[in-house]
Image (cartoon, one colour):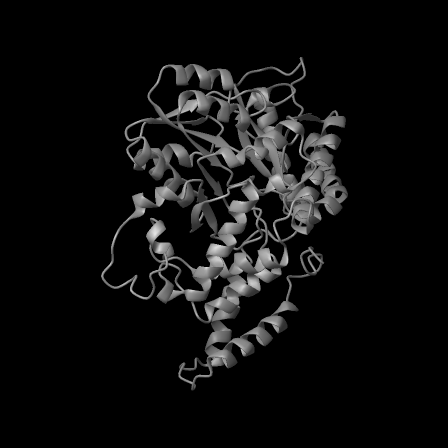
Length: 458
């Protein structure tokens, strides 16, 4: 089965449009209705779409392997086509009467995600993204433990602090270690003081891809009785691959013990934006969502997705696309989908190895997932920060698109002659999340090498 992005070397995929046309014809025949949709002048549509295409050129080529900067991954063709196909109906997955088929597809797709993380029973649904999914998880946690504080690593996503403020909850950072993990000693000391309702474990930080030691946090949960939320928005799918290092493997194997989990299919799940997912281990938390509507839930006694969601109208298209992708690429450990993830991780580790051997660079810690961070060598951290920004620009001029990030200096294996004139440093960062990145490491390295030489010689 082909997993690669169609014709990525030369152009955006256009061949799949023929498949969409055939599927649309089948969809039309299934309804067998007289024509009623008002026609739009083709010339007017063509004119506007031409303008749209021209405007969209003001983007980086996110779909191409030489875009290796931020966490932007193109949807799989089947997701793109299924999403588009459903838009001719435009279902709303708030209530069954707004999206019967797409609501069932959402439940099936979410059940597959719950099975992937090891939940025997679950309550869950899709959201517009990880932020909304995390909000729902922390909201439920606040209902279970009202007034208690939320803890997360200082390397966790900033959304947790912001969501806690929205919910009126106290939020506290927990210190991290030199590998970007939550510090277990610091967490235990804070828990001893009491007043903690929720601990957020991050499985794949968005800065470095670090995986918090979930097994150790589970052990602390059993001792201190807090709500354990796993923010696996970025890394949630990596439990499917066989090549994880032992600490990360142990963390993913303990996902089933979390009370709630967030996964973003629009990150590694090959979905269009926005598609997040929140899962609860105990279906009984659905009682917190209880509400009534005088006109929405009349069509069936079956549970409507709007009855277990803070969001109301939600795109059925997102559910259709996710269902179709999981139908084509099942969530099987070591399967085709998992091998795509493993390819990106292998690319990240290969790039990290090359950086570690090159005296022009200072490596960060070895990637646990598929994010690489590194510094250009310089006489001081402030000089390295400046050089990072210049290499970023020079690489873009060569057609290689990286990212920069400001991180703690302790994340890097600093040489003794490098002056520590700052606690944080601006580094280069690459997210190698596309399956094709394994085949493009040589090209990425060639352009990085050229850009680095250009900056050093300037």
